[in-house]
Amino acid sequence: MSTTKFGILLWNQATDWPSYAAAARRVDELGYDHLWAWDHLYAIFGDPYQPIFEGWSSLVAAAGITKRTRLGLLVGANTFRNPGLVAKIAATLDHVSDGRAILGIGGAWMDLEHEAHGIEFGSGFGQRLDWMDESVGAIRALLDGKEVTSEPGGHYSFDHLRHQPTPIQPHLPVMIGGSGEKKTLRSVAKYADLWNAMGPVDVMRHKIEVLRGHCADVGRDPSEIEFTLGIKATIRDSEAEADKVWKAAMEHNKTPLSELEDDDTFWNGTPEQLAERLAPYIELGFTTVISEQPAPYDDETFERLVGQVKPLVEGVAV
Image (cartoon, rainbow, N blue to C red; front, top):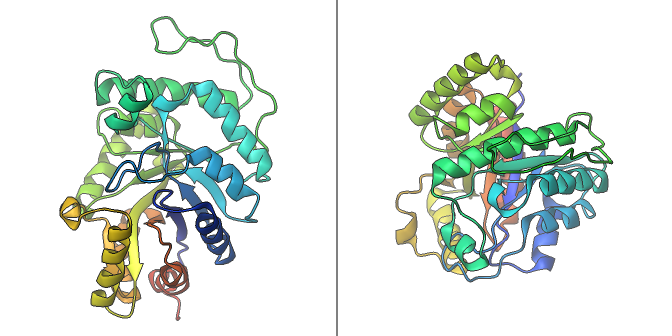
């Protein structure tokens, strides 16, 4: 019998802290494997000026009110912080949570939040992904208790940098998000313990082949990398009812449906429909499913995703 992990990302926009904290507790109580937060300073769906909580702070707070779920950013914006600081924050979260931290990271993409905060955004995706690759190499070394000094010509200037304490986990896992074929997937092959991606099955099948090629180039066994699939689930007894709940959530998040016409990651339907959609991804090797959940947080979907969809995809009688 195959085992599929399930995680929840709580949209940390358009909410208040009591609601967020209650949802984090519920995710933990229901037995989810992971609890994730975004790393954004402005809201990324709808009006960017809606309330949004900072990611790392949310995770540290969640660590104190949860007991078992792993905690990570999906994914951290590499541009926001010095990589040495990121490694220190991740190690601190690992101690606060008694060894439950995951370090998620990506190249960053939202120009508005960078411009408004005066954060360097670089010349484009290519440069930011080069920065990320250099960053993750340093972070991995620091988390493993090694000393880091930057090579000449890089973006960072570490000088005999060392950290204590190291994480509780002997190997604190790193997740890299994204599917860029030339740079992101090469960084995944070099450094990632988990890879997060989303998109149609055929596209994901192709991305996996590209990733396998990069793994061969760098001497990495792709089976060492946990494939995680991103979706946004709303579950009810009918697809029409799920659509109604989802539309209300988008209205709450000030997100016109016209902005979502090209987003195929919103999966609204019955447990059977979601399990059917997940099946081909699981066959491709996506052993972990992470559903992003908007506020107001939908307890029925939380319950049915792990309580009904999970058994269906694992072939267990509900």
